[in-house]
Picture 1 (cartoon, one colour):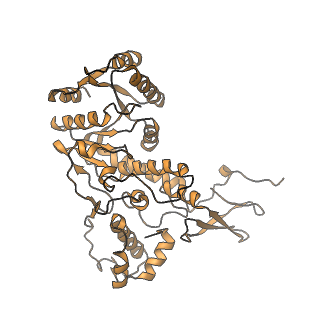
Picture 2 (cartoon, rainbow over the protein chains, first blue to last red):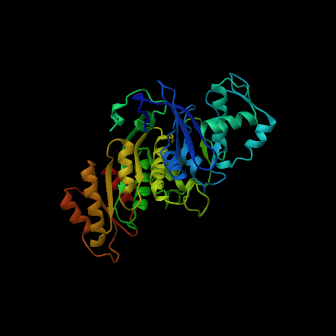
Picture 3 (cartoon, rainbow over the protein chains, first blue to last red):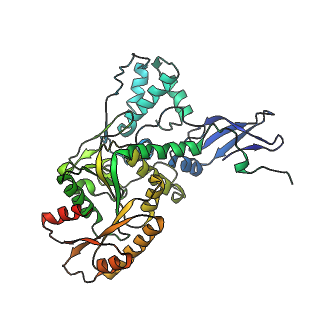
Length: 153
Length: 259
């Protein structure tokens, strides 16, 4: 899917993705010549179709996690299906730029279903690390969730 | 009418890079399977002929013969391989870039949706229920891709994929692998099974799969017919094994030796 500014005959560039939380998606595109911005709005079924392909509109900003689509999308997963293995890079929280978790953020994390919790924790940590964020707080989680499309996590 | 350029006319860099994301997924599958000697799809097109039973015992026979084997249970909605391989109930270990398979009888490595789902629960996805047929197939194909690419299979002689009845999963598999897998077909002796298996074998042949041969299962116990011989003649492939209701252990070793 691409967007063309007909007046300028220019391909519009992706600007921003928003997930309002109701299953819909909004993505904005801007004409590099005249600055006109359009928003693409998808209904829940269309949004789901994109999710089901394991791709992200706007591109990936953190690495894909193993079984990411399965863990994000299966609703009948066993609570004890996964245990998290160690980080082979041996990074402990707080070392080598690996972020720490505030008590409030940790409290929120433990409310995430176990089927997906370990993966979500890694995604938030990767997000914070890539941006040089030292401590993950609920505010960081909110921003990451919106930016990365982690609805319901 | 305004002159409007078409999709392929627009070639500026695209930040979403959806084709590149799909390409990266395919590359990840290829890299993960680089240490796997051969991928074999076990299929029939017909339900209830014993594909999973044959798959599990064949994998065990290969492993016993010193040929490390894995089984990917591609029957996402009716997974049975963990029970057949007597895999103990244990969580899967998730690392930052891979999942460890669980180990069944004779050291066969395994991944299955049965290891992930609540006991007795169907495979269900989050998302809108209306028109779910539009996206469910794509979701299952993504799950299959992730089971291939995200499980650390290690060095295997053979990875067997236990396919569900029908052709849909085989077609998805061809797309995900980027090349058609070798195919082992399973039938029972009856002409009804032969009809369904014939369609599956023809589809596999048209896709370019190598047909390794046919296993005739449940022979000698009330099922009358010559489906395996008929199909073998028609497709010029061997009948690799005839498996009775109570096969001797060496039946599986013999089958493994022919692959």
